[in-house]
Amino acid sequence: MPYYRVVGEVPRKRHVQFRRPDGGLYAEELMGEEGFSSDSSLLYHRYLPTAIVKAEAVTPTVETRLEPNLPLSPRHFRTQELSSAGDLVTGRMLLAGNGDVRLSYATSDRPSELYRNSMGDECVYVQGGRVRFESTYGVIGAGEGDYVVIPTGTIHRWVPDGQVSVLAIEAAGHIRPPKRYLSQYGQFLEHAPYCERDLRSPAEPFTVEGEEVPVLVRTRGGLSRLVYRNHPFDVVGWDGYLYPFAFNIDDFEPIVKKTHAPPPVHQTFEGPGFVVCSFCPRPLDFHPESVPIPYNHHNVDSDEFMFYVGGDYSARKGSGIDIGSISLHPAGFTHGPQPGAVEAVIDAVSRGITTTSEKAVMVDTFRPLDLGQGALSCEDTGYAWTWSR
Ligand SMILES: [Fe+2]
Image 1 (cartoon, rainbow, N blue to C red):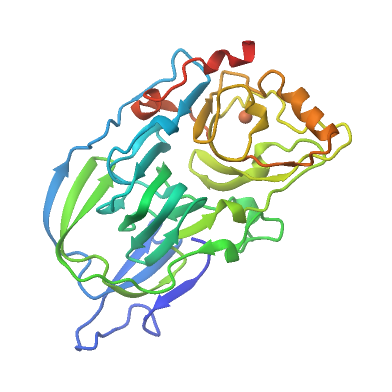
Image 2: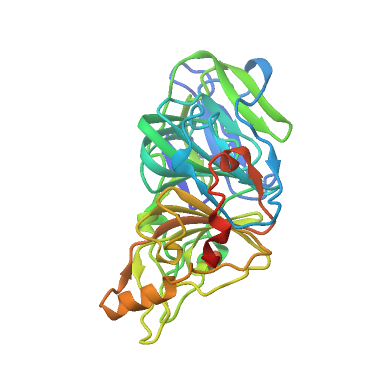
């Protein structure tokens, strides 16, 4: 996706004979998007990536049913109340979703099994803890504040070092940096809030020996488990534009205005039917008469799903929202700061406060979000009425 990289050993030309030390051929695998018409990488395996010995259907262990947001309401979900339901893949508690994206929360200290999501890219935000992301491309060490973006079809697993909590954003397509920040050839432009140097990707191949290795595979049809004859982590080298990478929210360089800037300045990624935004600590708006807090707004084409991950989010003061909370402000409802929040922030500015410490991850979807059982099980049902107090 982001730019050309080469890791490990690759032959001088693509699609030529590339031999192992024992004289046998490495097996080439092209991972490519949009039917040979978009970004791709070529991986070189010790063993055939096609060799499977068994396939079985798998029943999900957590509830994946969604129900409409009816009666239409702004919602507050307290992920602080959710406990582990498995590993960071099978234990994902579905919070919200639609045909474009599924949003889940998971917390776990156990390694996941090998997993391949063949429905779309994933962007996994690490809320807390340290975790090792292992994949056919190599390893990425991730921790608090990292977005780990995983291309469709990448076989990988999560190995936590202690308790790890994540928000999993599962797309039905590809997740990319916003197009307006890229040159026509894909380089980040100077006005972009981050660039290539901020992206971390595997630096060397990662190989594991093993036979009869199960891989959980998610497709539109459901979940399956395929057993591979040899361990899929057998890649000695790869090159291309398509690979997993991590980006830390603290490396996002906020864009500020003299008066209040709307969320597109916080946009970090885009996917089909949604965007991901990072609200980061930054200077407050600096017009002498500015109201440095969001104005009431009704984004008629969006549902706003906001995960509060750090600092103090002044617009939500008095609403019960805390670190670990998620608010959902759907289309059909005009939302804005809680009563008294505007006056409080103007007062703070008059006392010399010039910065905000807020940190939040927002997913704006262009189709309504339905609600999952994970969210409904930790809902603060009084939230909708907090503007009327
Ligand atoms: Fe909003």
